[in-house]
Image 1 (tube, rainbow, N blue to C red):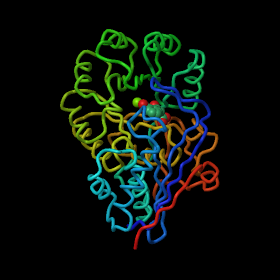
Image 2: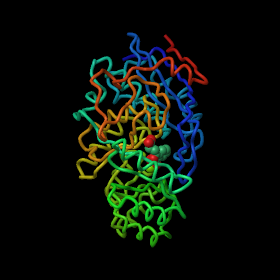
Image 3: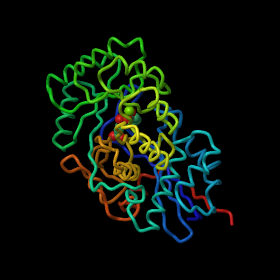
Image 4: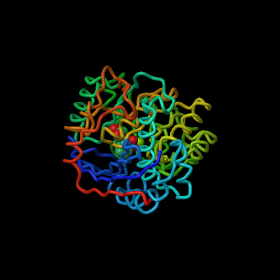
Amino acid sequence: MNIEQVKIRQLKMRMKSPFKTSFGSVQDKQFLILEARDRDGLTGYGEGVAFEVPWYTEETMKTSWHVLEDFLLPLIMGKEIHHPDMVSEIFSSIRRNNMAKATLETAIWDLYAKKQSIPLATALGGQKEKVAVGVSIGIQPTHQQLYQKIEDALEAGYQRIKVKIKPGEDIALLNAIRNEYPDVPLMADANSCYTLNDLALLQELDQYGLLMIEQPLGANDIVQHAKLQSQLKTPICLDESITSYEDAEAAIDLGSCKVMNIKYARVGGLTEAKRIHDLCAKHEMEVWCGGMLESGIGRAHAIALSTLANFTLPGDTAGSTHYWEEDIITPEITVKNGYISISKEPGIGYEINHSAIERYTVKEKVYRANR
Ligand code: OSB
Ligand code: MG
């Protein structure tokens, strides 16, 4: 591969309803789409999932664009790239900025699979024909509205329900859900809003039969989670804390969690996500694929990743209609009986809906390789 042209677009897409967590709320989602064109004319697509505000990680949509334009594109464009694994190696001279890196790295994975005329899932080594899907439900204004969302999700076939909790909306909330739905496969995501001072409260959550509690403590913490896990029955799942293979190794070593949420964008791309997956498999740590409220392009990468064998638990990869009136790929991603079927088409496996992308684009810029 040899990338001769890259287009970065900023898109703005309105979600059907606002998505609220312990750190903030999003409704008009702005994100990047990167198109990487090879010398032979094929194009790979990647999504930049950093939010406008640095509340989930330190990156933002703007820092992603800046790092891509000033540092990452110059390292890649016009260079012979034999395999997408080379990209993360080339990027190792740039510290962190994982979401910016993943934007370009995933586009190159898509391009690579298209060049080989194989699905991205196959290029990554995935063998599943379908992947299990759960749903993540944001904080709702009332319990009644939350029950409605749960009803809708169960109706649509999602295999597990994840709810967001925060101080003041934790025990009472889970208690209420368990009264209505005693047996539903349920988990809770705290997005880092507790500390070890909340130990007693977190231990109280043990009684609700949660599949796991996601990221209860600090976004960078691995040590305190190990202390907490030793005093909780509920398995801890780490999300924010795992930004690299080394973080995953440390969490496994210390016993900081029993489950890992892998998001390719948080760890710098598909190559690093695959390495973490393989490490977890070796240590019998179960993993699932997280989501970033992506459009269909980012979702397609997550779905391809989820076909690796140790993604044994349902991921946060809800179908297109869950968040969007209209997605930017065709066909849209559909969930049937709790599963998404893996496309057999080359690359991400979905066509780009060019007219939709154009309509949602608020800004774009083209970069060409120096010859
Ligand atoms: O913590 O998993 C999270 C969305 C934005 C930022 C962080 C998270 C989430 C979700 C949504 O839970 C998952 C999805 O994309 O459907
Ligand atoms: Mg999370």
